[in-house]
Length: 318
Image 1: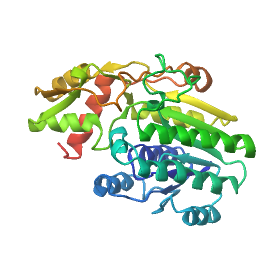
Image 2: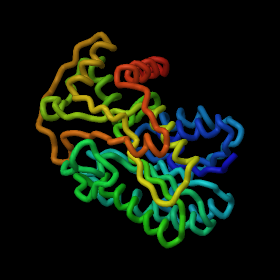
Image 3: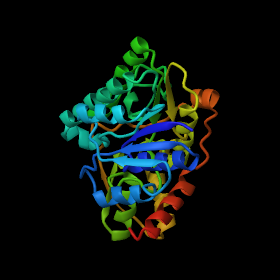
Image 4: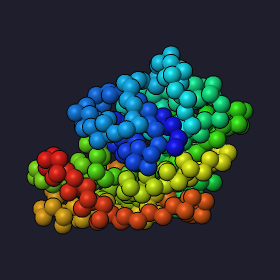
């Protein structure tokens, strides 16, 4: 049994990761600042699944507060830091770049500093496939430079990755960077495309499709992401970067068509040019994760969307 700090524990991926860890017998300390970027009732709903479970402790902590982070590490001795918490969303970052620098870079360094005071804490960092931008050959390999991000969000995540390398190098801390690709599923955020497009179709609103729907995204179901994360957690080994994707990009028109079939209702489409922050494709080369972690995604888009929509109905969101 390990003791693990999970940041962003009230969010989509953080809360699902905490649940998996608790179910397998680990002890989890979860932190979240419960900001109002989206409805805090959804975050409290996420926490409701885990707050009563044995081995879970929650603290409302903002990791941008260095003193609060240090106090947390003084109170607990962690085996690993699962750093999921962040300001997400490429499009929101275009309008608020300074916020992403503060939270995703400065806040991460606060955590790294506190972790190094305890010795060899395994740092597992949730990054993003959007660090590859639009100039990387597909499928995206972890060996690519990833030095041309298209917006502040991927730029901040790449900066976090580079900062963490310095901690691995100077302080011999095991660091595993996990680049997530287009994660979706139950408990997903309401600002993400699967949620937005589902509610738009059902409400009879126009949904926006960039570039005539020709953009392709490597949609990766939440359970596959968590499986890869746990495998990485259990095998610390120096400084490593892994893509966690499905390895099967789907054109947005096909994605919407699948939603229409599941929902039994046609979408109203508003086709507009893609903004500069949107790459034409995201496509994970998962060879390294497959070979070194035994990672193997199992859920394809139709099944994943059926599960997601069933959850929305169960929660009476739709």
